[in-house]
Length: 299
Image (cartoon, rainbow, N blue to C red; front, side, top):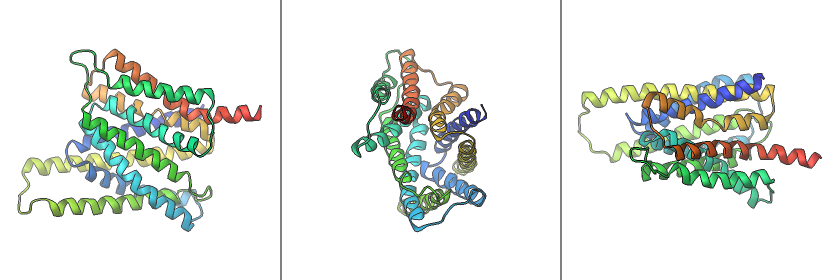
């Protein structure tokens, strides 16, 4: 029971981190929110890593650094998508696509799916259609740019997962440290480029400075939530099975949807609710099909 509660808690905190990232990106640029959240997460991971242990090999650092660029871009696009909204639509859309990408990679690499896995892929495609369908006047209508960002983020998150899957099993949090460091360096360089291209000599208004301070505070909260969720997942893995934790954490859009509904009062049409339900179900099925395959193999 405890591993289940830990996994669900981690999923809700991940969703809350995405919500805060989206809110922060409404005040300052998404790249800056991602950068500051990344620094916060890096510091906290540096504190946690020695407690976990792990072999600091060249391979672990290399794969982690490569994944850092993909992960940094993915989170930046996700926060930009959530800033546009509606969060309750774009968050699960990203989650479904991020699950499809590594599964497709596995299929191309020779893996086979169970009937549950193929059914999940079909449900995911139906969910993508339903969440973007607006039959009622006044219902939430996703902006095309927000959908584009969400799709791009989902693809890059999938790529991130594929790359991190290549890291050594005995490396502990070392790849994650390299990941965060590479992401922070990449995003920091991108910010410098954007600042250089911006017009010089323009004084920042009081409102702009206030928005920056508010966005910075939200970014720090976002980074703390993300690092906390990672620590909870690690704790859950020590208590339970990887397959169970993976399925539970795949439900992270629930946290975003809950906060968006409570704080932003986003309205969703019934058919879109059906799409959200299918998205969550597809994510859970995509995460659990590996466990089912192993059980069938043993049988």
